[in-house]
Image (cartoon, rainbow, N blue to C red; front, side):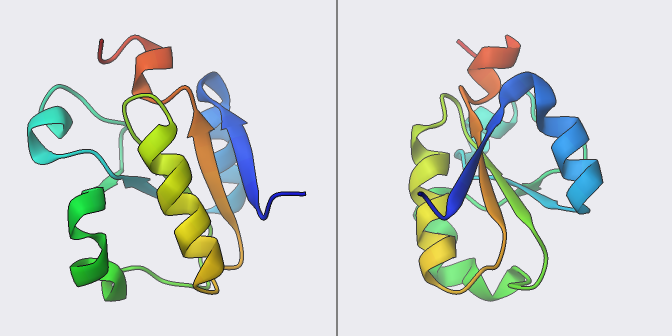
Length: 100
């Protein structure tokens, strides 16, 4: 069983609220400007190693990207680094019609 939960895109808000989660958008800044989930934090995957300390290991994290691929990689990495509860938004913002 994967240490990373998969959250259907349309359930992201419920999951985030129920878990008092940080919503981590791992897209690049130019993608972020196309639209993002309310309350999300932008730390691009390319900046994660430099900005890792900005995240709280004790707080659940929902990782988000365009299609769910980059965010799945980041979620697995965070889980391997001791984050207790990490999830990936399946299908990314594309599944919500926010980005092509």
